[in-house]
Length: 359
Length: 158
Ligand code: SF4
Ligand code: SF4
Image (cartoon, rainbow over all chains, first blue to last red; front, side, top):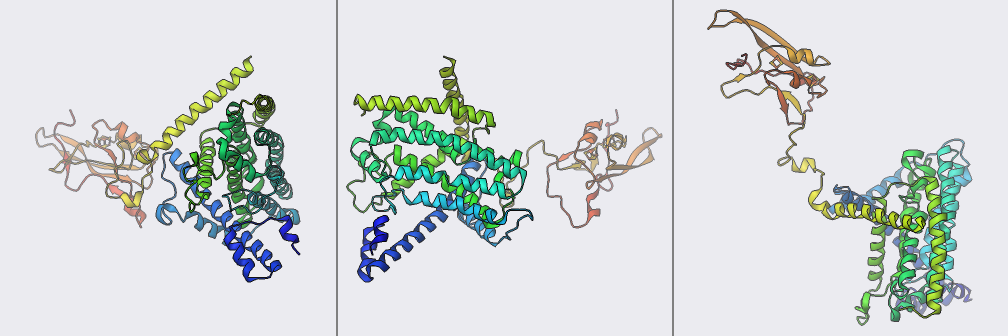
């Protein structure tokens, strides 16, 4: 009977769940809560995606001394809503010689992988849908599924540019997955836990992990941001899309809402990478110096959002500064620099913890 | 050891690049290059070197500097300028002298190359700064640059 509850410990705001349990039989209530959470996350997903697109366009404009979207709604705030409506109303076209099944399946792989990763983040003490004890491991596993969607999209489109883009994506993700994993592992050494909520709790007393682990933490953070940017296929690692070489890369043949899925997934992945970094390095939803710890009504999720926004801005800054890498440079960076440095860094972190040199 | 110095150099150059773009980002609000055109129609001023269309300035008493030498007509690579000229008797010397009747300029054909303005020996034609040149009828783009009844300024030909 309590089967669903056992595998998924749902604890979105206590008050709501208590209220639902009080008016319904137990099984029905747990299903209802699941639906509520699913809707909440889908909404979050859509809003976050759309507003990240808008933010990207605004930030890009400011980097290039332009103004950016400013016509639809005040300061252009409704611009991406209008774009989304346009994309929904577009016809879904496809070429004749596609592999229909895989072609239609690919966008869902990408978007579902992104959505699943969202579930484990502790946005605040209460607001975490899926708090498993192997959260970090789960994230690494899920983030590799997205690339299957990209490979499928490239393969089934029956288009040489799409296929080249997809193959590059496979190459890139397989390489940089290593660096992401190892830099996360460096931080896990420090916390001794894979559970995201516990990682956050570990930072309540000792300060943020980037300070606790000082030198190796900072190196791990830098490597994580580089590899994370590569994971999301954004410039300067956007060989996958490479407009000037491959048309639009793996999603060349997609239109309408299916294209929008790929597009949104890119921004959600950016959000995910920033969220992992916030949890692992910057104390998750904890306030800096505990300034709001005593204010009970203060929504801690605000701190989480602010930190994530800061890191996302950093990634946008990368994008609008650096030129795209060549494929060989991409591989040199990973295998000759990031990976050896990462291994050294892991050793350094182990030594520091062994000698108790953490702050 | 060049391995580590390469890393150091790489990080340094990347940070230099980021500081440049970061500077742009900070100053974006003040230094934005975008003109919100229909909104700022009243205040929008085109820059000096902007090429809108070729015009012939006239003085207050309706006199211009064109001698009718036809250099501009010859210089124009696509025949956008046609000069219809005439001869008139110079009252001082009593000799017959060339003068323009109509300086016809086809804005619809002009490529804004500026060769006519370069060629003019007396600087009779210049660039105007207007850019709202769209009209409903193509024939409106054929303009006569010299105003009716105008004449050449004294002393230009010397
Ligand atoms: S600007 Fe060039 S094309 Fe236009 S009238 Fe002068 S010479 Fe001809
Ligand atoms: S505009 Fe200048 S170049 Fe053309 S006919 Fe007149 S004086 Fe000669």
